[in-house]
Image 1 (spheres, helix red, strand yellow):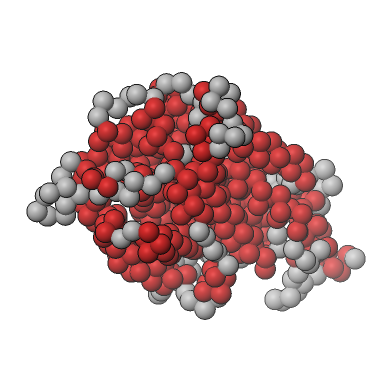
Image 2 (spheres, one colour):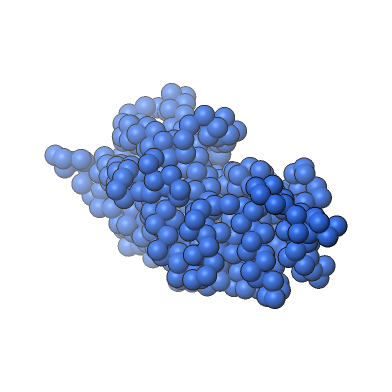
Length: 484
């Protein structure tokens, strides 16, 4: 065994002798996960299933409010005129992202220092508490505050991206990230469906829910309660999730050399490990990827806000006069199984460019849909929703993979925390600005240039074009592949 410990002369060094040289610590959770990965070549199915559930629970609260937010703001009597509802709804939609923007980097640092699992549990407990309180909101300011506090304590996204690549062997890390992105995408789609079908249950299902019950007095409590109950199940599932952070400092240099063999990223990694979190800002492949990701995230969040407000607003303002249940059905149309097939045959950034080009005519078609009716309208909206949601999740998956490939393991949670912070800032701006523009657009139905909702979807396309332009040189750089 001594030869093995020294072994691997030339280019044949393996991970196992390096792990032995790194003095495996049985009490270190990160070492136990590394040993398990060396001994087990297959997928960690249990961990991936639990991770899938936890990720869905963290993403459900983000957009489940949009199908009923218009009606909730109306019932809270904060808007003096119907045209002002979108204005106030935008700030409720933005409050969650503002809270997350303020703390995501902090949660990433906490996850890199104390572990990924504590951050996951804090996020899930915040969902259980503040999501429930949001459903019991009796005033606009209570709704605004509880959404903001939920965002402040939602620190899971960055650490979970790091966790997904650490719990699997290197050859399975992209599959784990794709699974996490798809589960998050499913949460972003199923969430609005939950909100659409379960809001105002006393009106929709009077045979089951009484007007005098808690669900009649608080018509938006039921979808919040269901998500909180699912979060309780996710807390239980966390018992099967191992901690992946190495919690010993004596062998830092040896562990770094082990990771260099297991996960070779680029020549920048050694510099990143030495200079800490500040090196993230000088890692241009990472920062350029985050910037483009933020632009597309802004467009995506603004679209979610605009679509929900547009679908439920009156036809005299260019909307569709749908109920919250109709919006939930449309947003439920989703399919992500096509991503692995496409991603294996197309360069990732080329895939993002193609999606951006296809998004422009898709969004341009929305203002013409109110001219349709009946089954033709349903078919057109179902197809458009399917395409837009597939585009969004595919883009999100690509950027998650590119960001994780741009940094070493010891900075991965911090890098993802940074990306979540910047993305959340953009997503904070998106619903607030979208709500203001939507309210303005409803007042200019007869304008000669971009009347009504044409203005709203035109602005969405402006950000699509900006994001597309930023995927080209000299702005965008690929880690180790600068020629792309």
